[in-house]
Image (cartoon, rainbow over all chains, first blue to last red; front, side, top):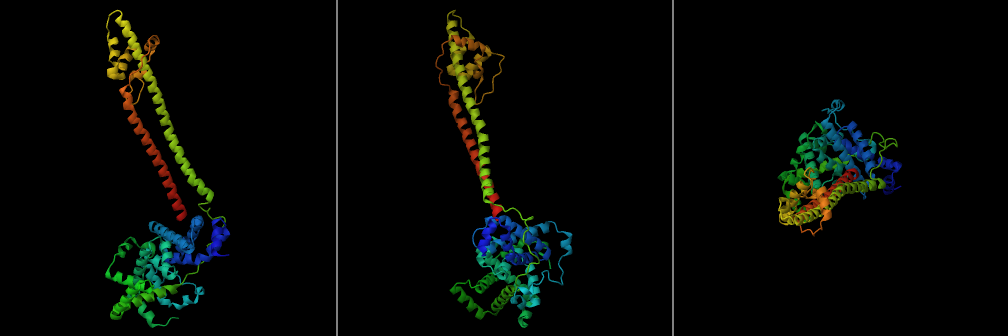
Length: 196
Length: 264
């Protein structure tokens, strides 16, 4: 069954069709939530909440950019979750706080594709850390564009911003990431060693 | 390193300020994404040939973009499929949406009617009361004429006979005010809007019985009637505006609710 048919069925209230959409997109949603939130537990909460919101709002979906629509709900959910966490940081989250010696993000599953293995492990860790140093709106834009591969138009839909703002945020985010990686020397080291 | 919820990103907008360095990165980013016009692209390539720092900046950004592309997606740790027990009811179901929209509009209309009808009914009552006061004023004038005729017979003038003679000049208020205490001194004046005075309470027992004997004369145009028309119109228009505002606010509220509900 094609995507549009699944969407139509889900809009008709068919939970099974919606759950098939969930399975098709949950890696995308979870990846965005993980990079936005920085840790697994809140990212899982945000992912589940995003799908709940998406099901609640599925009838409002129009058009063909379902992934961008779903990721926009994810981004909004993550923003809400971050605001909530800032207001009321819980003990468990503090306890699970940043560890200077370990990446906040788990490495991706190698089974996702050969390109996942192509990136040097040290550079990956450095890049994930550098991402967390970006302002969250910059991080969102650069992750959607460069990791998820969304077009500028889809990124604009997902973040609810004009195209020009998306472009400028993307360039600033890339520039900031480059500067961080250059400052840590990771970019130069990555250029010298072969990719595994 | 600080996690996202431990940082304050309120200054991120300030970071969007344009500087020569950010403008350089804007150009490089557009170049990498192939978004540059032909002329700009050639100009940048010329700059790249001459400027080693610019080349380094471009190569660094290219490496970042390529590395980001290779980060890949992280596999979800579990299924996030919704169970029938926990799945929320989808919002914006056609019937419920229609019910919500038209129900709210209907509620606003009902509110409007409920607000307007008693007021308009009150105006109708006022008008009928004013008509009755006109009649009573006419009766009272007729009574006065009868009294005057009666008084002329014994050729004895009284203050009571003189008062109605002033009525057309002084208006019904003056005439009524003079006539009422004589006719029914104990009766309190009923509250009347817009300057209606005790003239409306004038048709009391004494005057009423006398009016039965007198021949009514046509009542002269009362100045107070002319002054009533304008404030009543203003009030009516004010109520219309208020009703419109109520409906408008109701629609706006429904629209905002729908936008929030359906567009997240």
